[in-house]
Length: 166
Image (cartoon, rainbow, N blue to C red; front, side, top):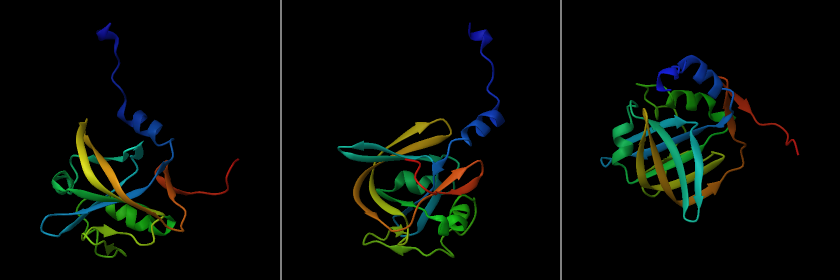
């Protein structure tokens, strides 16, 4: 039976996943030395309401991977259409990601987007390997909601949310 298993076509898999709209976040932290780090993630979800837990997936090959594994806290910034270029920069290796952003620092020095659709501040609860990524589980200790609408990632481009269908 194992001989009959076909190898998954990576391009077909990526194309299939691209048909599922996903929210866009910029996840940030700071190193022990105070250097800010961040990445764009569309693999983000609520994990539990009690206790309040979220998860976000980080590529193990990302430049910021060591900083996030060592971090005690991280912030999930849910981006709006105004952050599209910023989200693309945070998805690119080697960029000076904080050079042109409108980030502020919270009381712990972690970068936050003050005009994000939502800001969710977390303590790193657990990091679980998952293929070429790691699943960061964060215990939410603070969440605030902004006035902007979130943006979605769909078929390799940003999708703006429109009217409710219900």
